[in-house]
Image (cartoon, rainbow, N blue to C red; front, side, top):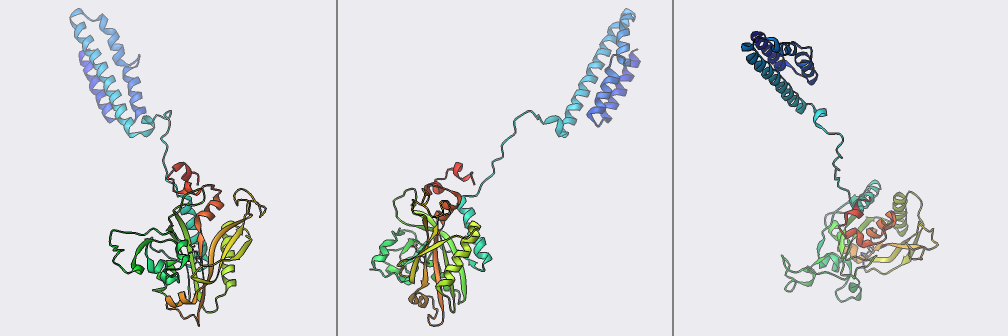
Length: 346
Ligand code: DAH
């Protein structure tokens, strides 16, 4: 019997070694450890062996059985590590994947860029820290003119700025509007030009639901021969139609901006109440959307453009307000709060 037991052990060890699947191993378990297996039959016979053999055969048989069981279990485990189904506990709750979201301002600015790109406009970047010359002087905003107070300016000191010793036009500041991009872009271009420049601007303002000390504007500039006010209005209407997917009524009001003549503000009819007045448009029925006008001849000259030959229009669109209107956001401060509960809604 001892001989036979040893043979069985060798045979099984070989088979376990060669097994490549959990099913195969379970088959071996039945075949070699099952009630009717040869090993079990032999073990049952141990009782009837002569006394002197009984002990040795019983111990050997039991050791072999235990050994086979351990080896099969171990191999099943090692195979299971490679078989994903056996190690993944499908009853465990899944881990939530934290995907980032784009800020609504980012989404809206992309929309604006796409629309103007489709209308043949170049999209350019400006710089957030500007020189007073571009932010004011060359835009026909004289140093002592009261209009300058309109832009509550953050001046920048330190760094490379030597505000006190430098010529006032060289003073560094956080740009108060995107209009300086008009001048900067024309340093490297000749008419005809059609461009937009979206970006962040800064003003020293008290913050409330509709005012922030940082906000986004989109500057637009078109210069060519024979550009008229109707081109400006047509362009803006086409832009609005693309944003809202419907014809939007606008209203043009005269307004003074030193860098345009004539200057005007353009309002859009509140799409929510159809002009009747509601809480979103503060019961006015209209929303102020942008400042615009025909580029002032002095500014054209500052751009090295001949005002006798060329004319142009420019506009400065308030992005935050239009975005809020588009998505139904009620408080501008949410945009800059860093609160992900806000961002994750878009
Ligand atoms: N820069 C002006 C502002 O921030 C807005 C503006 C008005 C821009 C008229 C223009 C313009 O280009 O023509 O208040």
